[in-house]
Length: 53
Length: 400
Ligand SMILES: Cc1cc2nc3c(=O)[nH]c(=O)nc-3n(C[C@H](O)[C@H](O)[C@H](O)COP(=O)(O)O)c2cc1C
Ligand SMILES: [Fe+2]
Ligand SMILES: [Fe+2]
Ligand SMILES: [Zn+2]
Image 1: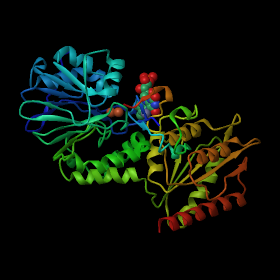
Image 2: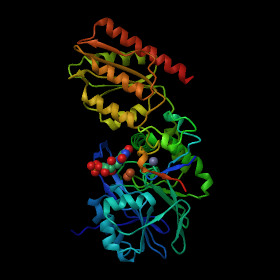
Image 3: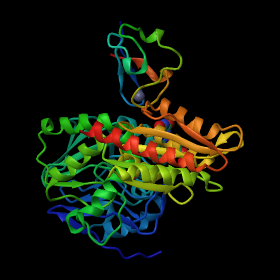
Image 4: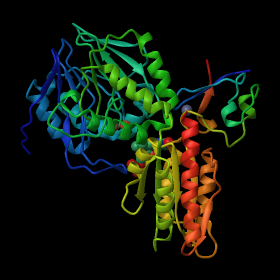
């Protein structure tokens, strides 16, 4: 699964790890993140994210 | 306006060319009781370099200090470690006077500076990039979200100076440039206040950065932040203080902060505080009508117990408390025991909203919320006293 990087702060969303602190189970694809999910580092919404190279 | 200000040398080739804002008391909603400084630094090397600028109204002061050393047009480079207007406000004026060859900033910095100052032509740098100044070089380290996306620091190897932007800084205007010329207790207070109000929510990142510092292999002799005095002695002391702030370890202290209209909530607060004291735990009572939110946050960061009390007004928690709750939540305060209380007339949203906010902040509430109607009875006050004692006891157990 593809990683996505936050344009604002550089945080990398790794689907393998998910974001358990914010209720996102490991294995959750970026596209399946709930709309309410925001960058855990800077609070940016998902439209600020781009596929990591 | 003609201004006469002189630069001050901080190392063989670096000058302080910043500005003192002695009388600022409200810095974006942060009570700066001791004023502040906006530090800018001039590196005299084959490539003359200005590191950061000052808040816009102080541009003349900075340029006058620069002129006391060198004609601004002789400056080749500007480095912007942080795009916030207290450090970039004077950038357009500086660029006009200097006509720099290059302006270095982080990738995020280029975007943010464009928003604040227009496109002045930025060169984006990343961790590990370095710019050769001739005899020495400046190496950049990204410190994003400490405390803005654009934040970075840079290290000038010739004089072993780390330009740390807001990090390791404090709001303190004074006669001396060096931290070791001030009372440690003053420095500690102001550093803790700065950390609590600006960096607390990024504590984990601060710890990660401190852990990575040795690996960067920088031989640092001077830490030169963008606010307050510079550090040249016992650097491990300020670094340890930062680590201590970031760990947010609970302390044997209680903050009892309350808002009140007709003193009912105040009576409850006082009884609770007395109960805490009866267990030998230090307590501080703060009335939100007179105590600034930034001081509340600092006191909260130093306490193991935070008891918050407020009356209900118009079916809402009293506005001053809503402000503080919102602020504490944003700063992600943790490792506290919470207690919500208040007085109401009929509907009682006040204490309930405090308890709900604690829950949202994941702050444990070992004792249930307590709300009285109109004035507390003597039995109510006994109960508040006992709750204070019980929570203090719980804290002492936790700290064992
Ligand atoms: C201490 C501090 C914290 C901030 N936190 C955020 C934040 O979490 N999210 C955000 O989008 N902007 C944040 N900002 C940026 C401000 O919202 C931004 O600078 C804004 O343009 C300020 O508007 P103003 O000029 O009307 O005050 C923060 C600014 C400061 C000073
Ligand atoms: Fe800042
Ligand atoms: Fe600043
Ligand atoms: Zn982000």
